[in-house]
Image 1 (cartoon, rainbow, N blue to C red):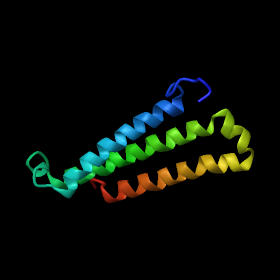
Image 2: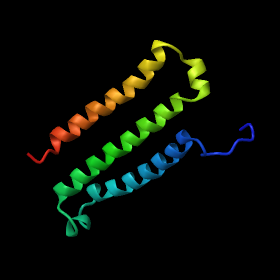
Image 3: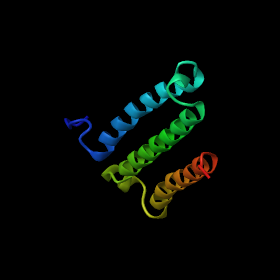
Length: 109
């Protein structure tokens, strides 16, 4: 659009990385649906922990891509003041809660 290159901004680059990583995460999740072949290489508990940690990394990438999109000129002009800060804080708060849940469920203690 407007004769601009695609995926040259941080938002575009992180968006592409996030989508590719999401596809890989979904393919890895198939090992949890059909664990017969995966249990030969690692225990099911370790596989679930790896999948949850990987999903946390994926969500972190998504939040960073979202926040870099909020730094664009268009979003900064459309959303100003307290609303902009709320739009930025809410995904980070969700990320914090998700990290806390993954940590409490899969802690090694």
